[in-house]
Length: 223
Image (cartoon, rainbow, N blue to C red; front, side, top):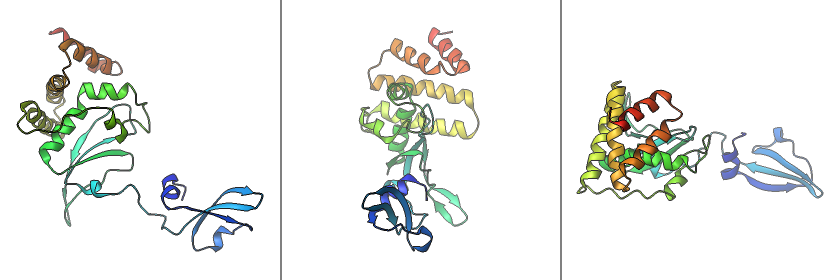
């Protein structure tokens, strides 16, 4: 009952001249403050397990999700998975950002863009690491071109994202890094970022990961 969002969505404010014995009421009650004219309470009749921030996007056929409890974005495409009672959509936790899609190709294109170094570097420039990092609001500040199946760059990003998911599932980190480098190169073309600018972005992002930094610098130098 201490969840802030529970009271945000379901709580109603009341003023009582007498102090309420919270154990004797059918509703959930919590005291907010004492006032000259009585007591200020929040009251709710919603069950304690009530959910919020749920909508059609929660159950979209394809969702690109990433954790907000982090210092970088690591997005993945999720869809239905087999269970003992049939195909069911996994539901990301309350600390995940969700972008819904009806099309598999569109979802993987978007996922590749979000995982690219230019996108992640830009987000880190204004979104502080921690609980609020990478919230859905970041999408208001970044122009992502609408997926166009006739655009070769877009379809290449879709294919690379699919390959990245497969490489991650099969435990092939070297292949995954190669695929991510290709994604960076195409994302740079979409945003007209030069090769030198992209190298700088990649090195800055790798600063907190020494092993990754060495690899990025090696690739940048062409060795």
